[in-house]
Every structure is written in structure tokens, then in C-alpha cells.
Length: 86
Image (cartoon, rainbow, N blue to C red; front, side, top):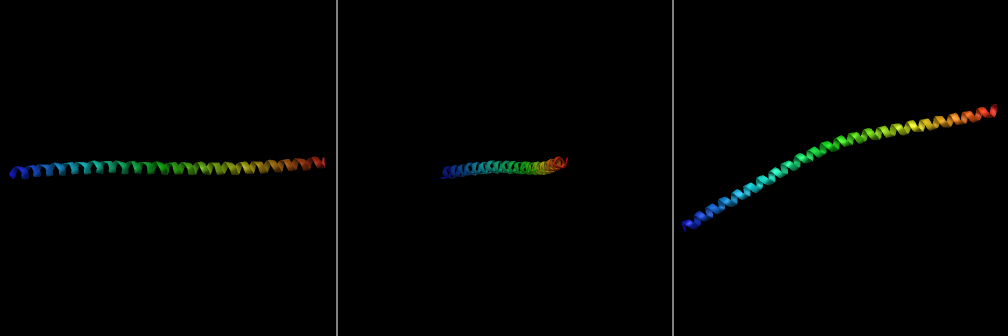
């Protein structure tokens, strides 16, 4: 009977140790995943800022292009008017 109790006690300890080991492994994996998520979030914010700057630049260039085209159209119209009166 004592041998069986002793064997159960040893087996119980081994099972507990295995469970604790598994829990620690999973906790470490979860910690690493959280760290990676935070890194990716930081990267994402940086990319968002870069995209915002690029969109602003594109918008600014588009406005400049529209102004240039309007100016060229006015010059063209002015040139036509000058030819009429010459």
C-alpha cells in the first residue's frame, strides 16, 4: 500500500511539474506574441504617418498641376485674343 501511495505521490509531482512547465512555455510564447504585436503596431503607426505625408504631397502636386494647367489655359486664351486684335 505504501509503495502505491509513494508511486502516486511521485506521479502526481511529475504531472504537476509537467503542467507547470507547459504553463510557463505558453506564458513565454504569449509574452513574445504581445511584444511582436506591439512592434507591429509601432511599425504600422510609422507607415500611417509616411502614407499621410505622401498623400499630402500628392494632393499638393495635384493642386500645383491644376494651377499650372489653368495658367496655361489663360495664357492660351490671352494669346488668341491678341491674335484677333493684331
